[in-house]
View 1 (tube, helix red, strand yellow):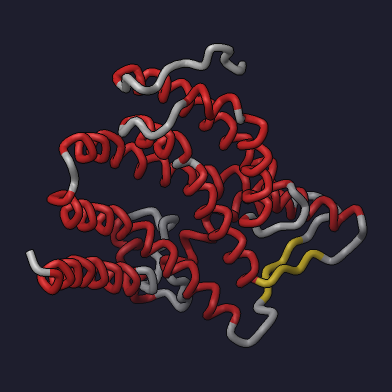
View 2: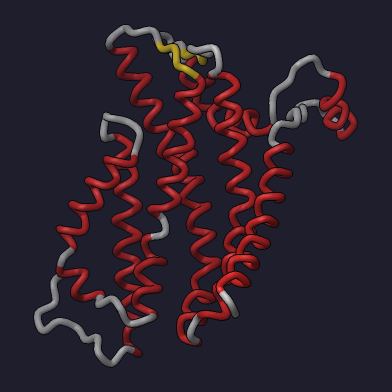
Length: 276
């Protein structure tokens, strides 16, 4: 197939993904339903008759942090408020949340379209490796997002709020800053959760020796800590260590998995003196 035909096919597939993204992005700006109305009619009517407008994306974001905020605000010396801070911050917060949540919804479609695009160019063993791990990788990415949202972000926020209370500092946060931190932690935790998949795929195509990688475990951990510290948004190192813990667990799981996979690779053998 000529290069132009390849580019044309790629453009068509990306166009379908873009259309889906735009549709979901628009939905994210729809008013969120009143889930506490008590009936289906009240939920449906809330889109049209209530005086409040809370975009679906912002509602989804706020519902993940509301229990934490309610819990913290019950503490005598902690009172947290979200403010605009700057003129465009409320709009920016909704925009960021809408873009990220729309991307999460459409991401499986993007993966599927890219798979259909590259599949004809793969060798049989490469195709088997991708098929074997593709959907597991998707599940791990979403699991990482949930871990970042419901474990790392609340832990980091509680630490910051508690430390500010000790210093007797008023705890008023820009909503745009909170949304941005929420997104960054979710995304990078999702990426880090792909660690065992990367190890497994490299092992599947006989490019990685798990015993050699285990021998360099201290170096891997040191580099991982540095990279995690760079990509995580806070300077307290709280999120760094909270993110490193699942990385270390998943890395060890990946090594165990890899040792089973490479049994079919004749050129990959255990080290004479394996590192443990």
